[in-house]
Image 1 (cartoon, rainbow, N blue to C red):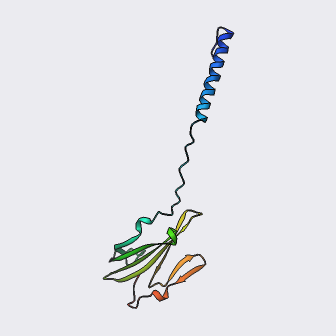
Image 2: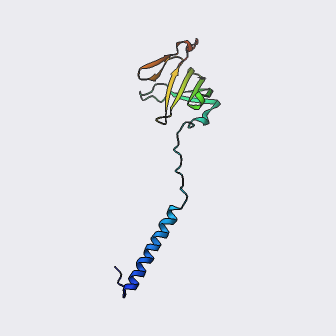
Image 3: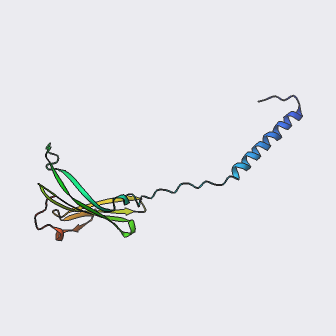
Length: 149
C-alpha cells in the first residue's frame, strides 16, 4: 500500500482511482457487443460431392485373411441432394476384371444432433441397415448378371 503525506493527497488518489474505474467501466459497457459466431450446423458438409463423377474403386478381395490381392474397378458415381439438403443419395456403378459393383449410399442429416448417418446397400446384398430395428429391402435392385460387392 502506498503511503501519502497528507490527507488531501490520499483523497485525490481515491478520486482519481474512482474516476479511472468509472471511465473504464463506462467505455467497456458502451462498446458494441460482438456477436458470437454462429455454430456450424454441418448440414452442408457433403455438398462438395453433389454431381456426376468418374470413379475408381480398389477393393481387397479377401479382407481380414492377410491377403494382399486387390481388385480394381472403374465407373461412375452420381450424388444428388435429397430433402432440401438434409440428405444425399449416392449411386455407384463400377466394373472391373473381378466383376461389377452396384451400390447405394444414403446420408441422412440429424439437425438436432448436428450429425450425419451413413447407410449403405449393394445390389448383390439386397438390404441396407437404416437403423437398429428397420431394414430396407433392395431385392428388386439385384443385377441380372450376378453383381459382386
